[in-house]
Length: 85
Image (cartoon, rainbow, N blue to C red):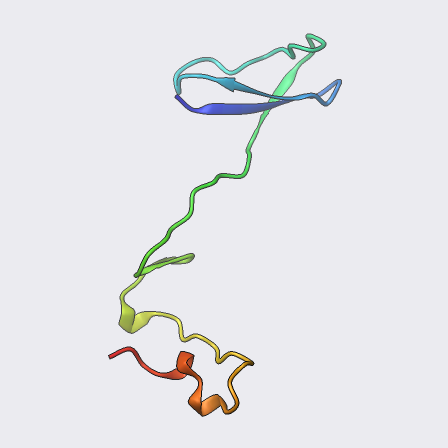
């Protein structure tokens, strides 16, 4: 079941409520009883592993080119510039 976050329009209290997707949204604050509004909170979802990029899924051939690091003596020798064949 998803956890929804709400904020009170009157007292500003933020609270969470565990609800089924088809449950009716909360309408009153547990602190003061006034009207609440459901808010969108930051998700912890992240894509990891080869082939996943923040702007979509792409193959290695279409992968964005990495910038050379500042630690290398010569930018032409930077390992980040070498291709992975």
